[in-house]
Length: 595
Ligand code: GLY
Image 1 (cartoon, rainbow, N blue to C red):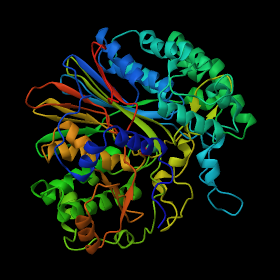
Image 2 (tube, rainbow, N blue to C red):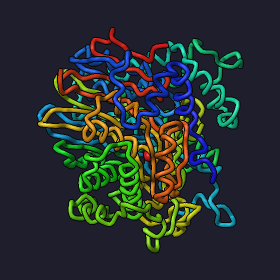
Image 3 (tube, helix red, strand yellow):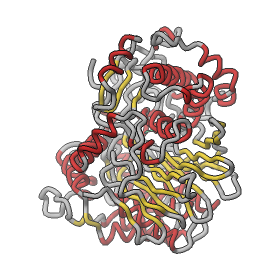
């Protein structure tokens, strides 16, 4: 069979860089499924607050906001804007995301700033003349763009829970864009790939991201993003309306109209971010707080944790064939329900309570054959399908402040560099999130797509997501803040980190470094990080009926773990993201993968 994920460029680059850096430790980590690796030198303690993100300068911005008296939501807003400058693959103002917040009094909420379909979108808009899916128009270009939500979402979170002035939170990002910042080897290589390939057809993108003299970027070059600085400055001064109305809205709408895109000024003006109750559940004496629909992440995560507990999997060694088999079967069932039921709750009735009810999860768990892998298509009855690719570039960051507020935020442009389009003059990349909708109504096939109704395209509807920003508490104290990029693998990565800490008793670093394995119902494959599965374990799984494959790396779970011994939060940058770093308040303490 073909490789499961045709484009995972940055995570793959990340794992290679990490392997070159510390080959002996890395190999050991990969071989120790669920092993105890201990803390890494770049883990950062932060008793007064911490930010962990995919980009060192962005983490420093968040750390500085905490040091200046901002709370975790202030830091999340500032880090989010900074990521739009320093991590253009996924950090954004032209995309969307989700933020889960737990306040010091134990109350929790979430902010949904997922993109929406434009008013002129239709369920069949990605079908060609023969009625087949035109993947080119989903992966790049103007038609793929959903109405961006990030600026309204960050503004809503700030208005509800922030403390510092808005301007102070956007201005650091504007300054980074205006003054520039030295780029890492990974960013230099990624920009050169973009400029030579997917960005080439889009003059606004080349103008924004090309090196002024036209030569390739080198590590250490200063990237100045002048148009983005102007856009961010306007947002800093005039608030989110500067993005959704006026000059910016005009520039986006004009470029859309000239290039076959659908988004109009009216679409931008109408965009609304939403505050929603998060989904919450109990897992082995811990509370797990995560994102509800229109993300599938929290619901599927809690389903898997419920089945894990029903089967008593915490009592099995993590690296036994029985544990890996049963965990795979759990994943298979949660992803089938995801395909059947999940979508935008403003458009479809998503039966979250029923899906998370303990008797239902016990029944699902009881149906698992301990001796034999299920057949995903047979399990689905009349729903024969394949949920599409698990690609998708996204980024997660985790924050706690000194008062005990915790924020988990995951943002995305969908593919790496989204649609690859910068509308001329705006300076920011637009998403290609429309591809997260089901693209061919009614067609659910073994080799194709999901065509079920809950996630079909409709005007103003939010496309289903897998983003899973998650906070875990025990006895009213935060234990873990986590999340990940990785399309459909996100939910599994978060599940692996949560079960590592809660069910296996691993320290944060060990849970994050442990090899990950993925199963998403269809395609019916158990996909393991390369080198992460000993040969004899692989053979036993194949005897049980699993098709086992390997991949480069899965996710980048930039997390905060609070040691039960010391009570001190530890910022853990996942080494699968090569430029990731934790920053404590005061920001002098910045950790990064050591060379
Ligand atoms: N675009 C990735 C996700 O929302 O799951």
